[in-house]
Image 1 (cartoon, rainbow, N blue to C red):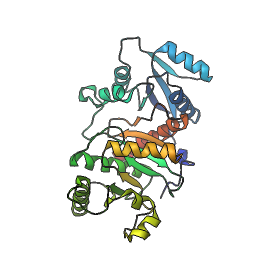
Image 2 (image 1 turned 60 degrees about the vertical axis):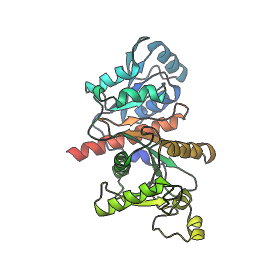
Image 3 (image 1 turned 135 degrees about the vertical axis):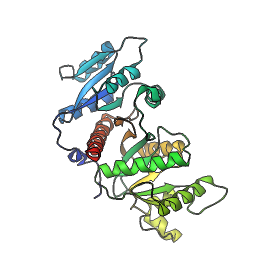
Image 4 (image 1 turned 90 degrees about the vertical axis):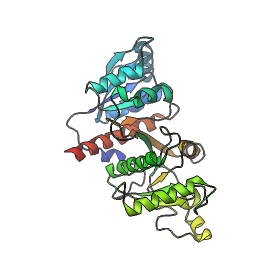
Length: 309
């Protein structure tokens, strides 16, 4: 099973007895509100808005959403919006956390703080799903938001989180590429050495339910013509990979932003490995990405629940 694009992604959300409660931290973000209320219109979420009531009401009225049902948790000036949102999750009153109108650092620092109760035994990482016009299917990319320079243990966790996110959509043994600057091992290029070690380790004793290949350069991941010209032999190169594991946050973040700006890609993203899925997109992203990220989180939520039943 493969996802060719985002057209039918909503069909991947299982039928829910009750809508999932989405806790939006920073509730005066225009695009986040539009995406969230679109998800409510589709019937699989209900909004819990956490933030400044006055600013939020201005946005809701501007968007024509003020008459729609929602729960408002007013957070007066001087009070921490992320902590208020996390308290709701800790009390069992929220199923999905969503970053709203606030800087990524201000949102993630409390989320990553173990004493706030969102951490599990797993390492958190961000997974993007991207539709690129010239790639034949959706492509996952990790990690562009959470772990700046992952060590080998964190890289294994990123690989497992990415594989699990794809499995939630029905993939069996997703094919992941360990991206590096070049496709051959070079002792002056640590990313190539790490990729080879991870692949060798995975072949001997798999640490994630996926196929893993690397090191491999970006052009070979994407282009059949590059593979032909370089005489590169890999069964999934040139359009067959389901996801890319980037060297670090800088390379992943730059790659996805280049896709968005230059290739007019469509993307969505979620932080996985926490007690609940976390919808996290750029504050400058269109409402569609917020909506798709909530679909992503709803699929993750129901898949995780099925794994524990």
